[in-house]
Image (tube, rainbow, N blue to C red; front, side, top):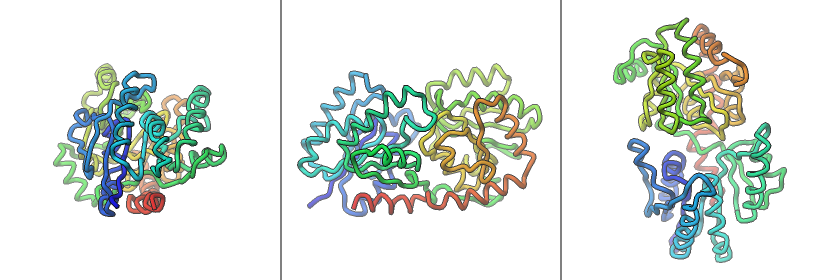
Amino acid sequence: MNKKILFVATVQSHICQFHLPIMEMLKEEGFEVHVAARNNLAEKNGLQMKYADKIYDIPFERSPFNKNNIKAYKKLNDILKKENYNIVHCNTPVGGMITRLASNKFRKKGLRVIYTAHGFHFYKGAPIKNWIIYYPIEKIMSYLTDDLITITKEDYNLATQKKFKCRVHHIYGMGVNSNKFKQVSLEEKNNIRLKKGYKDEFIILCTGELNKNKNQSTLIKAMADVVNVYPNTKLLLAGNGPTHDELESLVKSLNLEKNIELLGYRTDLEDYVNLCDLVVSASFREGLPLNIMEAMICGKPVIASDNRGHRELIHDKENGILINLSKNKEFNNQIIYLIEHNDLQKKYIENSLKIIKPYDINNTKKQINAIYT
Protein backbone atom coordinates (compact mmCIF):
# COMPACT_ATOMS: atom_id res chain seq x y z
CA MET A 1 0.00 0.00 0.00
CA ASN A 2 1.37 3.42 -1.01
CA LYS A 3 2.00 5.70 2.00
CA LYS A 4 0.90 9.30 1.42
CA ILE A 5 1.51 12.38 3.53
CA LEU A 6 0.33 15.96 3.06
CA PHE A 7 2.30 18.91 4.46
CA VAL A 8 0.19 22.04 5.00
CA ALA A 9 1.15 25.59 5.95
CA THR A 10 -0.25 29.03 5.25
CA VAL A 11 2.55 29.76 2.73
CA GLN A 12 4.90 27.55 0.73
CA SER A 13 8.00 29.40 1.93
CA HIS A 14 7.35 28.00 5.43
CA ILE A 15 7.52 24.44 4.06
CA CYS A 16 10.71 25.25 2.12
CA GLN A 17 12.42 26.88 5.10
CA PHE A 18 11.57 24.28 7.75
CA HIS A 19 10.42 20.94 6.33
CA LEU A 20 12.46 19.98 3.25
CA PRO A 21 14.90 17.71 5.17
CA ILE A 22 11.94 15.84 6.70
CA MET A 23 10.28 15.53 3.29
CA GLU A 24 13.53 14.17 1.86
CA MET A 25 13.64 11.57 4.65
CA LEU A 26 10.04 10.53 3.95
CA LYS A 27 10.74 10.17 0.23
CA GLU A 28 13.64 7.86 1.06
CA GLU A 29 11.28 5.78 3.19
CA GLY A 30 8.80 5.33 0.34
CA PHE A 31 6.23 8.02 1.11
CA GLU A 32 4.42 9.96 -1.58
CA VAL A 33 4.76 13.56 -0.38
CA HIS A 34 2.27 16.34 -1.19
CA VAL A 35 2.22 20.03 -0.19
CA ALA A 36 -0.77 22.36 0.23
CA ALA A 37 -0.04 26.08 0.85
CA ARG A 38 -0.33 29.47 -0.81
CA ASN A 39 2.40 29.93 -3.39
CA ASN A 40 4.47 32.92 -2.25
CA LEU A 41 7.84 31.73 -3.55
CA ALA A 42 8.10 34.56 -6.10
CA GLU A 43 8.59 36.90 -3.11
CA LYS A 44 11.48 34.82 -1.79
CA ASN A 45 14.22 35.39 -4.36
CA GLY A 46 14.90 31.87 -5.60
CA LEU A 47 13.59 29.75 -2.71
CA GLN A 48 12.49 26.43 -4.26
CA MET A 49 10.18 23.60 -3.28
CA LYS A 50 11.81 20.15 -3.39
CA TYR A 51 10.79 16.54 -2.67
CA ALA A 52 7.08 17.16 -3.34
CA ASP A 53 5.25 14.81 -5.71
CA LYS A 54 2.28 17.20 -5.86
CA ILE A 55 1.93 20.84 -4.86
CA TYR A 56 -1.50 22.40 -4.28
CA ASP A 57 -1.73 26.20 -4.30
CA ILE A 58 -4.27 26.99 -1.54
CA PRO A 59 -5.45 30.59 -0.98
CA PHE A 60 -4.69 30.70 2.75
CA GLU A 61 -4.40 34.15 4.33
CA ARG A 62 -2.65 34.90 7.61
CA SER A 63 -5.67 36.68 9.04
CA PRO A 64 -8.20 34.05 10.18
CA PHE A 65 -11.01 36.48 9.30
CA ASN A 66 -10.07 36.79 5.61
CA LYS A 67 -12.79 35.40 3.27
CA ASN A 68 -10.17 33.58 1.21
CA ASN A 69 -9.82 31.11 4.07
CA ILE A 70 -13.34 29.82 3.33
CA LYS A 71 -12.15 29.02 -0.20
CA ALA A 72 -9.03 27.44 1.28
CA TYR A 73 -11.15 25.20 3.53
CA LYS A 74 -13.29 24.02 0.59
CA LYS A 75 -10.29 23.37 -1.65
CA LEU A 76 -8.48 21.49 1.12
CA ASN A 77 -11.59 19.42 1.81
CA ASP A 78 -11.74 18.37 -1.87
CA ILE A 79 -8.05 17.40 -1.82
CA LEU A 80 -8.47 15.30 1.34
CA LYS A 81 -11.50 13.55 -0.19
CA LYS A 82 -9.61 12.77 -3.40
CA GLU A 83 -6.15 11.81 -2.16
CA ASN A 84 -6.83 9.43 0.78
CA TYR A 85 -3.76 10.39 2.86
CA ASN A 86 -2.31 8.37 5.72
CA ILE A 87 -0.94 11.47 7.50
CA VAL A 88 -1.61 15.19 7.33
CA HIS A 89 1.14 17.26 8.97
CA CYS A 90 -0.02 20.86 9.38
CA ASN A 91 1.79 23.99 10.52
CA THR A 92 1.28 27.71 11.18
CA PRO A 93 -1.73 29.07 13.10
CA VAL A 94 -4.17 29.61 10.21
CA GLY A 95 -2.99 26.70 8.06
CA GLY A 96 -3.05 24.45 11.11
CA MET A 97 -6.53 25.49 12.24
CA ILE A 98 -8.22 25.19 8.83
CA THR A 99 -6.51 21.88 8.10
CA ARG A 100 -7.63 20.33 11.38
CA LEU A 101 -11.20 21.48 10.80
CA ALA A 102 -11.21 20.05 7.27
CA SER A 103 -9.45 16.81 8.32
CA ASN A 104 -11.62 15.85 11.27
CA LYS A 105 -14.22 13.76 9.42
CA PHE A 106 -11.45 11.86 7.62
CA ARG A 107 -9.89 10.79 10.93
CA LYS A 108 -12.71 8.26 11.28
CA LYS A 109 -11.32 6.60 8.14
CA GLY A 110 -7.82 6.36 9.62
CA LEU A 111 -6.25 9.73 8.72
CA ARG A 112 -3.69 10.79 11.31
CA VAL A 113 -3.44 14.54 11.96
CA ILE A 114 -0.16 16.01 13.24
CA TYR A 115 0.28 19.68 14.10
CA THR A 116 3.62 21.38 14.79
CA ALA A 117 3.36 24.47 17.01
CA HIS A 118 6.23 26.73 15.97
CA GLY A 119 5.66 28.81 19.11
CA PHE A 120 2.29 29.32 20.82
CA HIS A 121 1.07 32.93 20.81
CA PHE A 122 0.14 32.42 24.49
CA TYR A 123 3.05 31.98 26.90
CA LYS A 124 4.38 33.32 30.18
CA GLY A 125 4.51 37.11 29.79
CA ALA A 126 2.35 37.22 26.63
CA PRO A 127 -0.33 39.92 26.36
CA ILE A 128 -3.58 38.91 28.06
CA LYS A 129 -5.45 39.19 24.73
CA ASN A 130 -3.25 36.37 23.37
CA TRP A 131 -4.46 34.11 26.19
CA ILE A 132 -8.07 35.17 25.61
CA ILE A 133 -7.94 34.57 21.84
CA TYR A 134 -5.30 31.93 21.06
CA TYR A 135 -5.33 29.64 24.09
CA PRO A 136 -9.02 28.57 23.74
CA ILE A 137 -8.51 27.98 19.98
CA GLU A 138 -5.50 25.70 20.52
CA LYS A 139 -7.23 23.87 23.39
CA ILE A 140 -10.29 23.19 21.18
CA MET A 141 -8.10 22.25 18.21
CA SER A 142 -6.32 19.64 20.36
CA TYR A 143 -9.55 17.58 20.18
CA LEU A 144 -9.07 17.48 16.40
CA THR A 145 -5.38 16.54 16.60
CA ASP A 146 -3.72 13.16 17.04
CA ASP A 147 -0.19 14.42 17.72
CA LEU A 148 0.98 17.89 18.75
CA ILE A 149 4.69 18.56 18.20
CA THR A 150 6.19 21.40 20.26
CA ILE A 151 9.63 22.88 19.59
CA THR A 152 10.14 24.66 22.91
CA LYS A 153 10.10 23.17 26.38
CA GLU A 154 7.80 25.97 27.56
CA ASP A 155 5.17 25.06 24.95
CA TYR A 156 5.49 21.36 25.79
CA ASN A 157 4.97 22.08 29.50
CA LEU A 158 1.98 24.31 28.74
CA ALA A 159 0.29 21.71 26.54
CA THR A 160 0.76 18.93 29.09
CA GLN A 161 -0.16 21.02 32.13
CA LYS A 162 -3.30 22.34 30.39
CA LYS A 163 -4.18 18.73 29.43
CA PHE A 164 -4.46 19.18 25.67
CA LYS A 165 -6.53 16.31 24.28
CA CYS A 166 -3.88 14.70 22.07
CA ARG A 167 -0.45 13.15 22.32
CA VAL A 168 2.13 15.88 22.99
CA HIS A 169 5.78 15.62 21.89
CA HIS A 170 8.82 17.86 22.29
CA ILE A 171 11.56 17.96 19.66
CA TYR A 172 14.68 20.13 19.32
CA GLY A 173 13.21 22.52 16.77
CA MET A 174 12.95 21.74 13.07
CA GLY A 175 16.69 21.11 13.03
CA VAL A 176 19.64 23.13 11.80
CA ASN A 177 21.24 21.86 8.59
CA SER A 178 24.75 20.95 9.71
CA ASN A 179 25.74 20.06 6.13
CA LYS A 180 25.01 23.60 4.97
CA PHE A 181 25.73 25.59 8.16
CA LYS A 182 29.05 24.78 9.83
CA GLN A 183 32.05 26.52 11.31
CA VAL A 184 34.75 27.50 8.79
CA SER A 185 38.41 28.40 9.17
CA LEU A 186 39.62 32.01 9.34
CA GLU A 187 41.05 31.61 5.83
CA GLU A 188 37.69 30.42 4.47
CA LYS A 189 35.91 33.25 6.28
CA ASN A 190 38.21 35.82 4.64
CA ASN A 191 37.73 34.23 1.22
CA ILE A 192 33.93 34.45 1.58
CA ARG A 193 34.28 38.09 2.65
CA LEU A 194 36.31 38.95 -0.43
CA LYS A 195 33.78 37.17 -2.66
CA LYS A 196 30.95 39.24 -1.15
CA GLY A 197 32.90 42.52 -1.27
CA TYR A 198 33.95 42.91 2.37
CA LYS A 199 37.40 43.20 3.94
CA ASP A 200 38.30 43.89 7.57
CA GLU A 201 35.02 45.40 8.85
CA PHE A 202 33.43 44.13 12.06
CA ILE A 203 30.27 42.67 10.53
CA ILE A 204 27.02 42.19 12.44
CA LEU A 205 24.26 40.08 10.87
CA CYS A 206 20.53 40.08 11.53
CA THR A 207 18.32 37.64 9.59
CA GLY A 208 14.53 37.63 9.41
CA GLU A 209 11.46 39.04 7.73
CA LEU A 210 11.38 42.83 7.86
CA ASN A 211 8.36 43.37 10.10
CA LYS A 212 7.32 45.01 13.37
CA ASN A 213 7.84 41.87 15.47
CA LYS A 214 11.43 41.40 14.29
CA ASN A 215 12.11 44.97 15.44
CA GLN A 216 15.09 45.73 13.19
CA SER A 217 14.61 49.45 13.91
CA THR A 218 16.12 48.96 17.39
CA LEU A 219 19.30 47.55 15.83
CA ILE A 220 19.51 50.38 13.28
CA LYS A 221 19.25 52.97 16.07
CA ALA A 222 21.88 51.09 18.10
CA MET A 223 24.31 51.35 15.20
CA ALA A 224 24.32 55.15 15.49
CA ASP A 225 26.19 54.78 18.81
CA VAL A 226 28.29 51.79 17.73
CA VAL A 227 29.79 53.53 14.69
CA ASN A 228 30.68 56.57 16.80
CA VAL A 229 33.04 54.30 18.72
CA TYR A 230 33.89 51.81 15.95
CA PRO A 231 33.36 53.45 12.52
CA ASN A 232 34.50 50.28 10.72
CA THR A 233 31.36 48.36 11.74
CA LYS A 234 28.64 47.12 9.41
CA LEU A 235 25.13 45.81 10.10
CA LEU A 236 23.68 43.51 7.44
CA LEU A 237 19.90 42.99 7.46
CA ALA A 238 18.95 39.86 5.49
CA GLY A 239 15.28 39.49 4.60
CA ASN A 240 12.36 41.24 2.95
CA GLY A 241 8.99 42.31 4.27
CA PRO A 242 6.46 45.08 4.90
CA THR A 243 8.75 47.43 6.86
CA HIS A 244 11.50 47.56 4.21
CA ASP A 245 10.85 51.15 3.10
CA GLU A 246 10.42 52.38 6.68
CA LEU A 247 13.75 50.81 7.72
CA GLU A 248 15.50 52.18 4.64
CA SER A 249 14.25 55.68 5.51
CA LEU A 250 15.48 55.27 9.10
CA VAL A 251 18.95 54.30 7.87
CA LYS A 252 19.08 57.42 5.68
CA SER A 253 17.80 59.73 8.43
CA LEU A 254 20.66 58.56 10.69
CA ASN A 255 23.24 58.89 7.88
CA LEU A 256 24.15 55.22 8.22
CA GLU A 257 24.04 54.20 4.54
CA LYS A 258 27.73 53.24 4.65
CA ASN A 259 27.30 51.14 7.78
CA ILE A 260 23.98 49.36 7.22
CA GLU A 261 22.99 47.22 4.22
CA LEU A 262 19.53 45.79 3.49
CA LEU A 263 20.42 42.59 1.65
CA GLY A 264 16.91 41.48 0.69
CA TYR A 265 15.87 37.83 0.84
CA ARG A 266 18.93 35.55 0.56
CA THR A 267 19.25 31.90 -0.40
CA ASP A 268 23.00 31.96 0.38
CA LEU A 269 22.63 32.78 4.08
CA GLU A 270 25.35 30.33 5.06
CA ASP A 271 27.90 32.64 3.41
CA TYR A 272 26.69 35.65 5.38
CA VAL A 273 26.63 33.74 8.68
CA ASN A 274 30.19 32.59 8.05
CA LEU A 275 31.57 35.98 7.02
CA CYS A 276 30.06 37.88 9.97
CA ASP A 277 31.57 38.42 13.43
CA LEU A 278 28.36 38.70 15.46
CA VAL A 279 24.70 37.71 15.05
CA VAL A 280 21.97 39.84 16.61
CA SER A 281 18.18 39.67 16.97
CA ALA A 282 15.86 42.22 18.60
CA SER A 283 12.51 40.48 18.02
CA PHE A 284 9.68 40.82 20.51
CA ARG A 285 8.45 37.24 20.09
CA GLU A 286 10.07 34.02 18.84
CA GLY A 287 9.20 30.35 18.74
CA LEU A 288 12.57 28.66 18.28
CA PRO A 289 14.59 30.89 15.93
CA LEU A 290 16.46 29.08 13.19
CA ASN A 291 18.71 32.08 12.56
CA ILE A 292 20.10 31.82 16.10
CA MET A 293 20.63 28.07 15.72
CA GLU A 294 22.52 28.67 12.47
CA ALA A 295 24.70 31.29 14.17
CA MET A 296 25.53 28.94 17.03
CA ILE A 297 26.46 25.97 14.84
CA CYS A 298 28.68 28.25 12.71
CA GLY A 299 30.51 29.43 15.82
CA LYS A 300 29.25 33.00 16.10
CA PRO A 301 28.60 34.97 19.31
CA VAL A 302 24.99 36.11 19.71
CA ILE A 303 23.30 39.14 21.27
CA ALA A 304 19.51 38.75 21.34
CA SER A 305 16.42 40.20 22.97
CA ASP A 306 15.16 38.36 26.05
CA ASN A 307 12.15 36.37 24.84
CA ARG A 308 11.13 32.75 25.36
CA GLY A 309 12.47 31.53 22.00
CA HIS A 310 15.87 33.15 22.48
CA ARG A 311 16.04 31.92 26.09
CA GLU A 312 15.66 28.37 24.85
CA LEU A 313 18.97 28.69 22.98
CA ILE A 314 20.93 31.53 24.60
CA HIS A 315 21.87 31.25 28.25
CA ASP A 316 22.73 34.78 29.34
CA LYS A 317 26.47 35.39 29.81
CA GLU A 318 27.16 31.70 29.10
CA ASN A 319 26.89 31.42 25.32
CA GLY A 320 25.62 34.89 24.46
CA ILE A 321 23.93 38.00 25.81
CA LEU A 322 20.20 38.51 26.36
CA ILE A 323 18.88 42.07 26.21
CA ASN A 324 15.88 43.48 28.05
CA LEU A 325 14.20 45.56 25.35
CA SER A 326 12.78 47.97 27.93
CA LYS A 327 16.30 49.11 28.81
CA ASN A 328 17.30 52.03 26.62
CA LYS A 329 20.56 51.65 24.65
CA GLU A 330 21.26 48.15 26.03
CA PHE A 331 21.94 46.78 22.52
CA ASN A 332 24.29 49.70 21.82
CA ASN A 333 26.29 49.10 25.00
CA GLN A 334 26.52 45.32 24.71
CA ILE A 335 27.59 45.34 21.06
CA ILE A 336 30.41 47.77 21.88
CA TYR A 337 31.35 45.73 24.95
CA LEU A 338 31.54 42.48 22.98
CA ILE A 339 33.60 44.07 20.19
CA GLU A 340 36.14 45.03 22.88
CA HIS A 341 36.28 41.59 24.54
CA ASN A 342 37.66 38.86 22.32
CA ASP A 343 37.87 36.50 25.28
CA LEU A 344 34.10 36.66 25.78
CA GLN A 345 33.47 36.05 22.09
CA LYS A 346 35.55 32.86 22.27
CA LYS A 347 33.79 31.70 25.44
CA TYR A 348 30.32 32.20 23.93
CA ILE A 349 31.33 30.38 20.73
CA GLU A 350 32.74 27.37 22.59
CA ASN A 351 29.64 27.03 24.77
CA SER A 352 27.24 27.48 21.85
CA LEU A 353 28.90 24.70 19.87
CA LYS A 354 28.14 22.34 22.77
CA ILE A 355 24.58 23.56 23.42
CA ILE A 356 23.54 23.35 19.75
CA LYS A 357 24.44 19.67 19.24
CA PRO A 358 20.95 18.21 19.99
CA TYR A 359 19.42 20.63 17.45
CA ASP A 360 21.28 19.08 14.50
CA ILE A 361 18.87 18.16 11.67
CA ASN A 362 19.99 14.54 11.82
CA ASN A 363 18.78 14.32 15.42
CA THR A 364 15.51 16.07 14.51
CA LYS A 365 14.92 13.55 11.70
CA LYS A 366 15.20 10.71 14.21
CA GLN A 367 12.79 12.42 16.61
CA ILE A 368 10.17 13.11 13.94
CA ASN A 369 10.55 9.66 12.43
CA ALA A 370 9.86 8.17 15.86
CA ILE A 371 6.65 10.23 16.05
CA TYR A 372 5.54 9.16 12.57
CA THR A 373 6.18 5.48 13.25
